Amino acid sequence: MKIFAIETSCDETSAALIEAEKGDKKVKLLSNAVASSLSLHAKTGGIIPEIAAREQVKYIIPTILEALKPIGSLENVDAIAVTYGPGLIGSLLVGVETAKALSYIYKKPIIPVNHLIGHIYANFIENDDIEFPALALVVSGGHTDLVILKKHGEIQWIGGTRDDAAGEAFDKIGRILELPYPGGPYIEARAKEGNLKRFFFPRPLIDSNDFDFSFSGLKTAALREINKLKGQGTLSEKDINDLCAGVQESIIDVLIKKTLKAAEKYKVKSILLSGGVSANQTLREEFKKEIEDTGIKFFAPARNLSTDNAAMIASAAFFNYKEEPWDKIIADPELYFD
Ligand code: KG4
Ligand code: ZN
Image 1 (cartoon, rainbow, N blue to C red):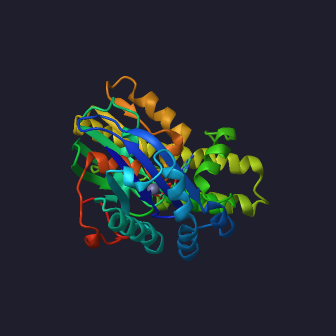
Image 2: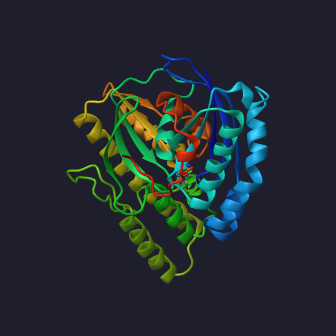
Image 3: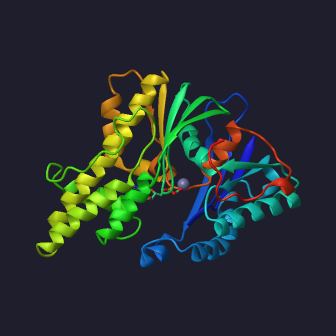
C-alpha cells in the first residue's frame, strides 16, 4: 500500500510518500518534500507563530505537488496521514484542513498521527533491524521524552522533561551567545572547536530515581558564566567555543545516562533516538560508544529525517494504521503521549 502524509506542525511544510505491505518491518521511501520558513525565523531569533502559519499556507500546495511526482496523483494512494498535534495551532490547521479536504475529494481514508510518535517512526524508514521491546528517546525543540515501545501500537511513556526540552536549552543558550537560530546545530559546530575541560556545567536529575529531565538550570548556569566573562571584557570566540563544548557535553551526558538506565530497567533490545536534536553527530557517536558492550542495538534516523518531515508521519501511520472519519479530525496543539 502507498501512504501519502502531510506534516505542518511548526516551521517546516512537508509532504511524503511511502510504500509498504502488511507484515513488513520497514517502509520504503518514495518521496519526501520539505520546505522551511526557518530562515525567516532566524532573523527574529525564534519562531513567530503567525509568520510560520502564513508560510505554511504559501508552501503547502507546491510541497504536495512535489511529493506526488513519483505517482502523479492522489488517485493512486491508499490513505492520507496527517500530523494533528502537538505543535503551533496556526501551522497545524493548514496541514489538517488540507488533508481533510483531500480525503473528502479523493475519497481516501485519513490517519491522524501524533507528531512525537512520528519522530520515533523515522527509525523504521528503510530499516528493518529494530527489535522489540524498544526504548525511544524523543529529543525535539519542544519535547524530551522516554517511551517504551512494546510493539507497534503499544507505547508506554516513562519520563520527560519537567521544564525546558533539550532542544530548547540548545536554542536558548544559543540566543544568549548571540548564535543564529536555531542554536542546536551552531552549538554543535562551535563545540567541535572548544575545550571540553574548561567549563563543567550541572547535570540536572542525572541520578534521580525516575526518568525525568530538567534543563532550565543549565541555561541559568551558562548565563552566569557568560555574565562573569562579559564582566571581564568581551566574550572571545574561544570563550564561546569552550562554553558550547561544556553545554553540549552536559546535555549529552544526561540524555545518555538516563536512557541507558531505562534500557536496563525495561530490558529493551533496541534504543531509538529521534527528534531534531538527534541530528547532533556528537550525541550519536557518544551513544554508540556507550552502548557498544551492552548488546542493545542503537538506531538514529538519517539526519534529514531527524528534523521535522512528513516521511516519519507516513511511517507512523503505516505501523499504527487507524482510519478516522475526516470530520472527526481536529488539530490539537497540546497533544502528548496517551
Ligand atoms: O524535531 P524538530 O525539528 O522540531 C520540533 O518538533 O521541535 O527539532 C528542532 C530542534 C531545535 O531545538 C534545534 O536546535 C535542534 O532540534 N537541533 C539540534 C541539531 N539540529 C537540530 N540540536 C543539537 N544539535 C544539532 N545538530
Ligand atoms: Zn518535531
